[in-house]
Image (tube, rainbow, N blue to C red; front, top):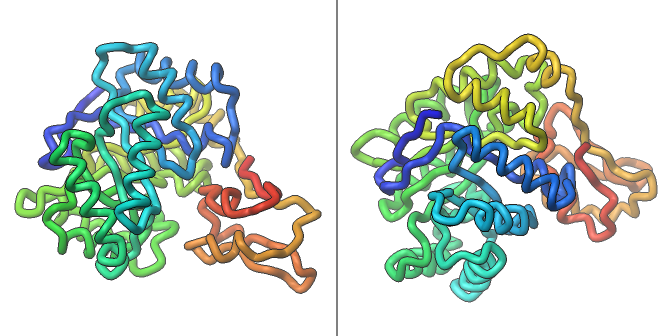
Length: 319
């Protein structure tokens, strides 16, 4: 496994970052022991970088992983939608408590859309910066699906890390082209800015599974990216992504497994049409139909499952 430093943070991460969204309750909802076994397998293959979020409800998996490897440097990144200092304090303490850890390596403002959005979360950002000075957080940053979010992060020298949506097709980038995003990320990672970059949605939330080999090779070949976060829920998926991270060929039998996987957003037919899922979807993929129920525009859906967290009746799931 190759390792790189994440910008100027001094944090050394594996090229493959294990994304926990896929195994958590918003998607596969793996039993604790099963999920921890996959995480441990990844560590044994050289993975030391794990991405989660308060929304994902996956801290329990990571807590057990950390207990399984005492003394091993495992890097944890998490995210929060907190706006105020008090909300961010609550989010940070929740992460520290549920992970049973004194500090969090990387703490991100979740889904920032622009400089304006970051300014709207200024109090939460300032709290994280104070926590960094106290040694409770090692690096702070943002996650974003937008070019404007990356551009906004460049306006804040105190932001260490950017976790952007980026893939070979530009799926999910609604405010510009893939090339425009790539040019800006190259600028962000350059020495002058020194932002640490690790990518998300390299497989377009599952939409690029039929061309997984090409999509993974593309993401891992980007020189501006220290790491690429990929959601995983089984050892064979770890094998594929570890090979891709090292630039090694993926055996045909493994490629057939991943290319044959089909994932979709399922909405129960007894949906009550409250519309909270559509309000939550930043991609504009969900809408209320003439029947008063939620529906999905599959070509717009990134299969993130965030809408599932917004549904008060648990009627939505990514399979």
